[in-house]
Image (cartoon, rainbow, N blue to C red; front, side, top):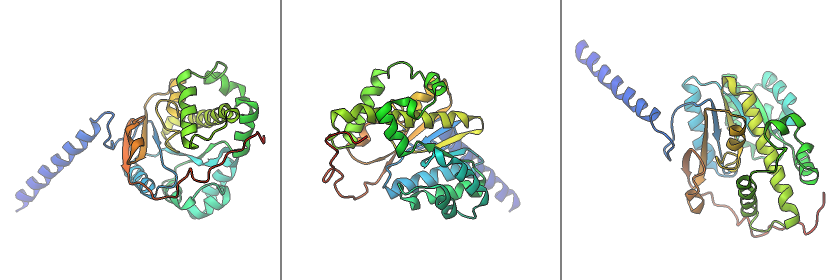
Length: 282
């Protein structure tokens, strides 16, 4: 009986090893890859519960497997980094951290499980966003309103934006705002988005030594125009980006290394009542 059980365990173990090996050998694919790169970017549709749950479960498996990245989050503004670090040391739970360092812009129940992961596994929490006030300043005065001259030079922003980034961001912004972006606002909105992406890339680069994962919208993690582009500018390697895409027309735009299909979240028509100002208010 002992020999039979031992043989059976060996067979099962070999089968599991082959399964894991097959997952590691998969390249860019629509099938989630269970391996931890040096830098991992995980996107989202902000209001989609299925996407948040799938992403959490994917990240949890990597962390339970031993990965200990810094958790770099779009949902925390960088001006609150001090409060965030203090709260992570002092708070007993995620709600306390969020009350101490989170703003009112986000549906925090979606992100509370991630903050709990950071507390449980002692993962550094990094505030990765520029504030709305800083974004408004960028729209009015340009990138130096949010990025210092060293970062501007490091990421090649002393030169005009590459045409593919400029045009790609312009299309993404116009699509995201239902084609209602006034011409006088478009360039400023592109600059604000670039400032966010560059700062997120810089936060990842700064924390890359021990590994880092970005939690941000799908637009930020796009390979072609988002954070991965700026990481490539400064020569960062070992980057893997995952889009969590609702089934439908957008799912054909595979601008990610790995694409996770998520169910469509039922929501009111976002374009129904959208009105942008007809003249600048900055």
